[in-house]
Length: 325
Image 1 (tube, rainbow, N blue to C red):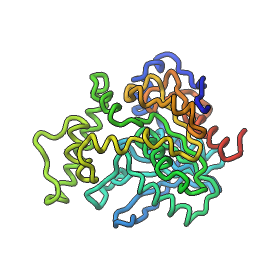
Image 2: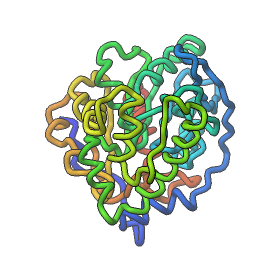
Image 3: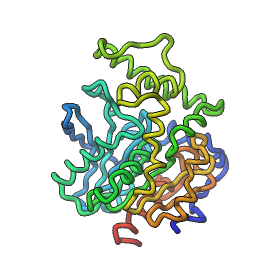
């Protein structure tokens, strides 16, 4: 019964407010001591993925996936990479298509359930570098991708992938989008949609025969995903896209230990994003729901500036690779 009854995360002072815990690290956290070296790999469809490496010559690797409109330079990715590096692991920041600072080559991009690129990147990594153990770590959208990948691949996940940790996951995408539409999330929604609109405007210049822009541009996820994400990636409409890519429906198929950590005060998540009933029955899905933490927050004052989420991810990865401390 991997339902973790009592989380070890504690927030203090203003960080007991979910929005403070969400916004503070995004605006003010600086993570020194990480130097990424970029590897560009060509995908089977002629596009590319940029993989940012912080390698120490280890046989164990943490693959870290960012959230919506993020990239491997985000503090939560760099902080996780640094923490694992300091404890003997290699780390890889996985940039989704179009998120590495250079537009990708194709009309299609990434989305909340795009697992093919992760599967391809893992095959390249394991072929070229021969890691013995891999831990997948995803944040928000990246966490949904990780959990969906494990669930849909099931026993076909490479044996080197020993475990996964996912933070702040909108695993029921449709209901999570209803949460994002609420007034208290207007600033986050505005920033996400502005960034997505900028990218689609750039694509319209490069693919004028395939893409036309509406006036006005989309103002929420239903409009954006219905107009762009769904048709570009082969879905009927926004609802079809959200339903088919929610990791919630794939969780029963997970065959590797997976830890899902989502704070109770995460304003992005709906009640169905906390699958406690499933975790109680699932032998490999661990659910931890701290009282505080916000969305991809979990601010804390650990040694060397480490956040609780980094300590928790490393602890789980160590336990699941047989090197518990």
